[in-house]
Length: 87
Image 1 (spheres, one colour):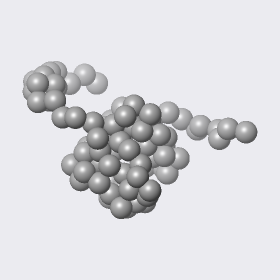
Image 2 (cartoon, rainbow, N blue to C red; image 1 turned 180 degrees about the horizontal axis):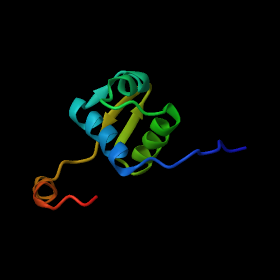
Image 3 (cartoon, rainbow, N blue to C red; image 1 turned 90 degrees about the horizontal axis):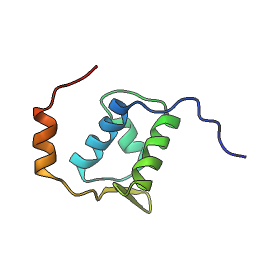
């Protein structure tokens, strides 16, 4: 039987986890990453985000290590920094 998902992660939470992984390049364990996040999130939400990042080929799990493998795109970063923020 599948685990019941209480809610889906919000985009800002996904981006927070992505930024933490991409800046560090690797973390020794999932727990080390989870504890280092600037905003506390539920572990179920955190695990769901990691599953998404792995399925979208942004991270790879090698043993217990998380490694950011998604290539950086300077043009995309410039476009994102110059775009308007919608809320």
